[in-house]
Length: 137
Image 1 (spheres, rainbow, N blue to C red):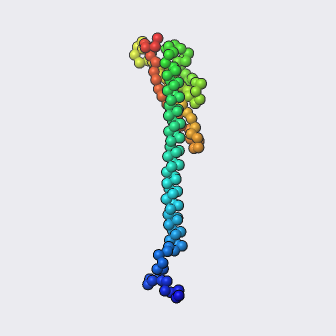
Image 2: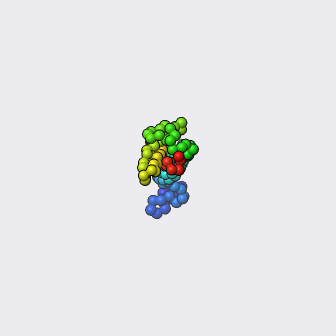
Image 3: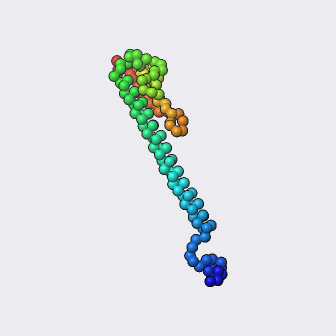
């Protein structure tokens, strides 16, 4: 059989097979598409972990803030200044503010700091509350 008879006019093979270059280009495109697809899942997982950590930090801060509710206005836990807590990363500051004559309010500024795993970035959640001398004698 004549080797030239395998080719049609224009230099292409008549057998319908792909050339090595076509297979390599298709493989490279497939690998790039899969890499982008995988990157999307990795990014979504990272976002989910950060979101879970943030929700846990908010819940811890809320728990500490609610634990201060039963104390009276003059309790040592509500003295002016910085206070640490038994919950890791949570601290709060109490500052006295006079709103009207005879009404004194203590503002509570609570902060929770944590380090996001993997990235090592420190994140912060802050909550605030108030205790009045009129409502909490």
